[in-house]
Amino acid sequence: MTVHPGLAPFLAPPDPAALPLPPAAHPADGVRLLRAVPYAVRDGSRPLELDVWLPEEPPAALPVVVFVHGGAWRSGLRDDLGPRFRTWRPGPFARLARAGFAVVGPDYRLSGEAVFPAQLDDLTEALAWLRTRSADLGVDADRVVTWGESAGGHLAALLALTASPAPRGCVVWYGATDLTAAPPHTPEAALLGAPAADVPGLARAASPVARVTPGAPPFLILHGAEDTVIPPTQGEALASALRAVGSEAGLRAVPGADHLWIGAAEEDVEDCFTASLHFVRSRTE
Image 1 (tube, rainbow, N blue to C red):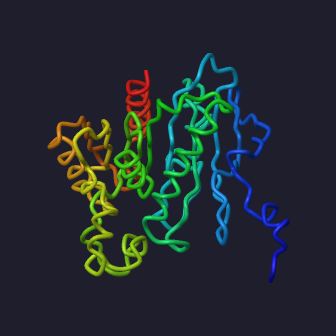
Image 2 (cartoon, rainbow, N blue to C red):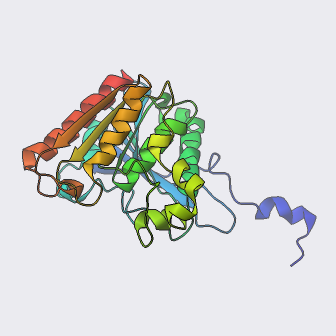
Image 3 (cartoon, rainbow, N blue to C red):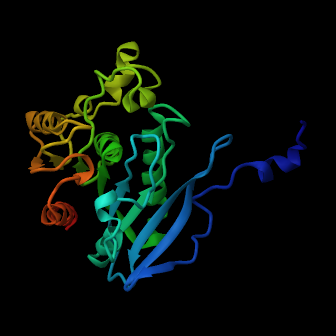
């Protein structure tokens, strides 16, 4: 197909930085939600979107939580903190907004769509979009903490360790931190596009423990003591790597908890959320 030169500018993908923001929904008292905002529009790929949760009447530019969803890198919903939180009313993101934070929940390409580092590239682009649109949103792009659970914890850690400027901190819930031994036929191998032994350089690049450098931001790492999906040793390894370079790394094992906080007492699940909120506040004050 031949395109007339005069049509070329009109056929280019729209620039998400220039698109109007959608009207706000009101999912809970005192909370505004901008749903499905495009942040990346690439030729040959689906548009990537994010949700922005905001307090109704913020007093000033808001600190930001960038939440990265889980789902073994192959599924998941950008507004889902995991099964233990799906019955919360108001939900966890509404609670964060009421506490004075903006919450940004981005999509990213899943392992069935693209292999690593596509996912990290997408989240890096979401941070860039956030900085570009910060005045429109009423947020402070210099006060950002990343937070993720499971596969999202892995990606949130990578984002915190590689973004420039670096976020103020990172919360990791039961995330993988070392993919260098990923065997065939696992979600980790699907993310890499091959077993780790076949792509050792890529597996190392995808491992937060290998991306820790001096000056890394503070981390809070929470992991179920009985996790049968991602062993607690993964969280311990990241904490050790951070402490070895002089960075702050809080590490907590949640008693009786398997992956997704399954088996944990309700008060322990509440405490995981509260501890994470306190960490975010301490890093963005």
